[in-house]
Length: 221
Length: 304
Image 1 (cartoon, rainbow over the protein chains, first blue to last red):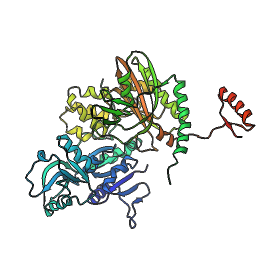
Image 2: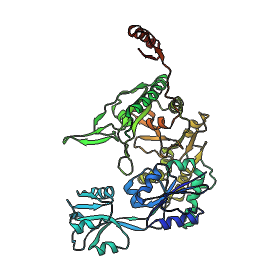
Image 3: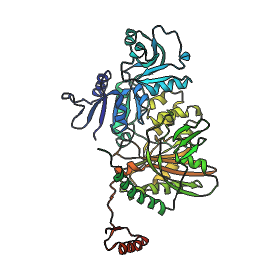
Image 4: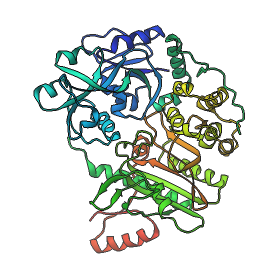
């Protein structure tokens, strides 16, 4: 039974590849700029991180991407494991000189790659903002004057500091997550649960519950 | 290349004709609900808009419309073929992409096993009529899950969310007793044919069909679902193609389903060709004959 994997290009790729290698799935070497490689049993696709949830939602069995992307894409899929890499945070970021709090941001213009997340956050506080969606280099927003603030992920904070910005508020913590297609988990139940169990074991995720232990359903009613 | 909208519509029309026949043979009447309603409980789904005075929903969720509009007690068997604009996501509050054409049926009356067997039988016969055989139906029980966590009702939404994401780690981190966690895990991880939950076992035992399973981790959450929920999916497609469950309505019990019928038709081996009686005489003669044959129930094609 073959399994298909969606791997994120970029900063998560190495950790994702190593994780699968540690549980016995070696990714074949790519020729040139191939975006899909196969071995005798499995298939591996290399995708932009923002697109991994889309691939998994629509049929790729397993994927890895950041929880920021999963929240933004809001796809219908399973997220059985949080992974201990790709840690960063989603924050509201403004100019270094900013001396205002979140509550004072009514009417602000916000640049972000995460318009849904941004909208949900400010709506939850009852604050109306105008959101401009950008696809990258979001730090340019306040620097060019097209926005007052930005919402973006922050790791070390170096990029925002070097662009004259600072964190004003942390919206959420972010880390990589394992994604599983809903239908795949049912049609490849044992195989995928075995992969999930092995990932948890490999990561030292303490759990008294193994997905592939023999099941005997006792009466609850 | 532009999508050939009309050819696709003709194919869907032929398939839906067969679907309608199946519903009719089961004694179900087509229901025509308003395409737009003023927003109120229990309406869900649809596209929201406001005219500045009131809020409205365009093409809301059909079951919620039935819940709102059904007034009198009795036994009802409805079916519908409806464009569903959007599906509300119960946990994130957002909306899924447009679903498209949905076929569904509701059996409303006294709570009974008969309702469930009949509704599942309708699904199986619709799929047979469409030559769609590569599917599975998984059944779960919301009541069993709620029973386990009855001392922690405030955690219900988070637990259901964890089940819907198949994320048991979140449940392990919750402040629940070990017994509660163990019982939840048994539900979470069970997939088979008999599970000692009578309502589920009775349904499975009523059908000799390998494609029906009990998967107690199945959570098809809508606020109106009471207990039994089910999900329909195919290995040919990465997302569920339908589902349903039971609900209470004005002291009666309802059990129904909705299918992404366009997707099912596209996955099926339905034969779109059809035999028609060819009539090729003069205009007058051909159409006289055609009228006779149509009233007898035959399909005709006049080529003059």
